[in-house]
Image (cartoon, rainbow, N blue to C red; front, side, top):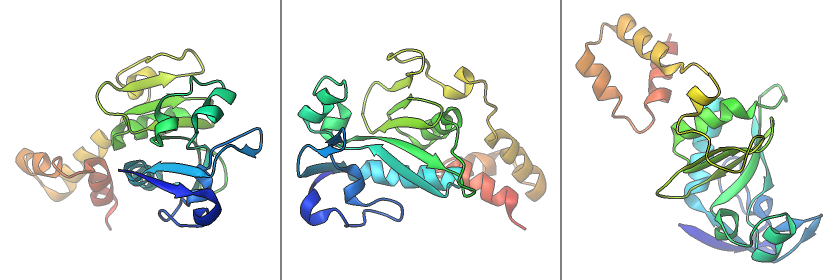
Length: 198
């Protein structure tokens, strides 16, 4: 659900462990373009899950909500996911302060369930909660959908298969037990935790 906030009165309100309202302000060239801020609660939940999956230290919003005027100022159409409060462009930092490559972030965001994902640069990524047809883009190449699987597109191996096998072998689980675990809302996190358990 998209909720409306005021930058003036709500900017310090914590939305979750890693995000507050003020980060999503509508701004262009250092100027706030409206007091209104729209933020999708689902976006916050998915982003927190992504931070957990990456084991990231922090995430910085570079562009969150945009009113129509702001969207046009930054080269947009004045419509779309940012204008609806369902998108943000983000940089994810490792715990040592270095930045995650957005190729890997794209893959993990796909696993988490973002409907719109676009690699803006090596460090910044667009994430949105669109429904229906997905947008999996690589904006370093084009503004169109480029794939239906970022792992294949970026030639990144899926580690979860390794963890499934490790869990199966370590605990002696049969195939039906593994299939049961795969019904978990975040099966990759579950298999990772089981594989790493003392």
